[in-house]
Image (cartoon, helix red, strand yellow):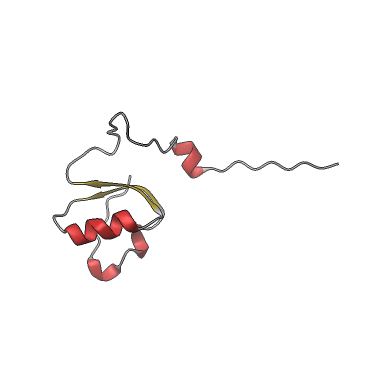
Length: 76
């Protein structure tokens, strides 16, 4: 987990490629931009723990799947 200051002037670049992002904001426009950014996995708005899941919500897999990738090589 990282907690970092961020301003709108910085743009979404520093927030890209995020598994879970918590936005403590009342800015609905910002929330819409975060949700529309394809490299941000989940957006939590307000005071919600990032481990919280409700049944029926899509599951993103496990942290190891996000941090690592599998690759096979087959040779003769």
